[in-house]
Length: 337
Ligand code: PEP
Ligand code: MN
Image 1 (spheres, protein in one colour):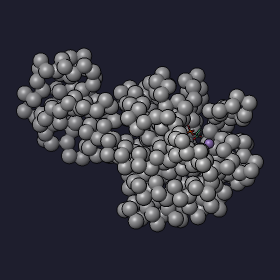
Image 2 (cartoon, helix red, strand yellow; image 1 turned 180 degrees about the vertical axis):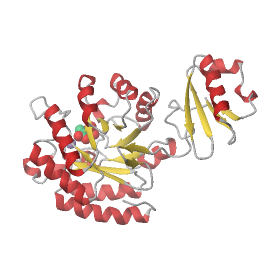
Image 3 (tube, helix red, strand yellow; image 1 turned 120 degrees about the vertical axis):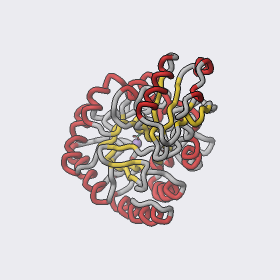
């Protein structure tokens, strides 16, 4: 249920509504928009029927949220959310480019790629230290050593770090170094892990599971939000379909669809979405045209030697060209890069 307060409602009145909601054993989530404050009452809201909140003169309207995800819904927060990743704002006017290697492979390699990202105009450095590999016999990531290299790359470039957390047992280490905690496609419905990142205070990049619907993605986000962490960025990274010419089928219609259903920022990962480097730039441009708040791409100076995902890695020069093309598309849709 959402309680829409009148624009002139004071802090004391907001507190009164929260107290009332909590007295019924429900959780109150406050969303302060530019115009007015909305309070979400989460739990079995039927109890609220006994004490109608409409009776408060500063309450404008009480509405049921019919969607199964409530805090993630656009109704709860009509203005889009802006997530602050160590100073980089995702969800605002600027389209944010996150780039880097699939996996952190070596100190020198990462520092070099970080410089390419920085000089190309990327805003966030990505790189996996814990890799969710399909085969247990392939490179699994450098673990904490990789995290330390990411920290060094951040010191050298000033770029915030996005890296994947696969398991709660690694949470303390990952939280020590990362600015944006990536939950990978394979863990989108690892509800314990979602609860873990929901109870901590760093922004989360939640990737869509390869067999998940948009509704399931939003419900996964709801797990994080309902723990009190509202800093969630959603990521479309392709879904599995009958088409096998590409690694996944990048569902770009999910971008405007999610933006309509939810206030959360949406980024697109055309690297995993296509699996082919020559499809990455066109789909990145299309993603921005479709309204994406950001792009995540993989880069490698020697894709043929990459320990993972070489076929989808952009060469630094291709990344640079993509960045200048993205600038034009961003401008055309009223955004900047
Ligand atoms: C990644 O971004 O490194 C990754 C493994 O992506 P996904 O979880 O989307 O497969
Ligand atoms: Mn990858």
